Image (cartoon, rainbow, N blue to C red; front, side, top):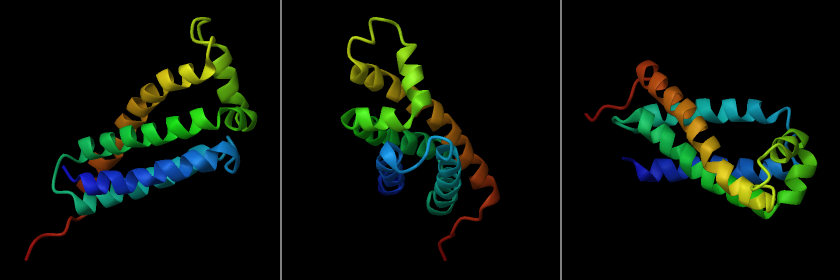
Length: 136
């Protein structure tokens, strides 16, 4: 496992976490993520020698930690700029609505796993397309 690459690429998640709090509109966020996923997949395919899916999955799990932490900390600002996320939070079971930040902490890993599968697939597909560096 290339933990250095996993951590370095997860910094995009940290940047996006702060960006989505109030700078990046809710409608444009998926476009940014697609670009980030393509770049991460390319880097993983170039820099790693195997376990491409797992590298992508772990990058997304680390992203999940960054994003959940920032969104929990800046919850009011995030929800003010993301009405769909606010509506999703309002539709949670009453037990979770006692403390909205707790609901974010519980749902963050679920999204991390879902997007981890997607990024893992991106990385796997990129490994079949991109030529890796071979030792001379």
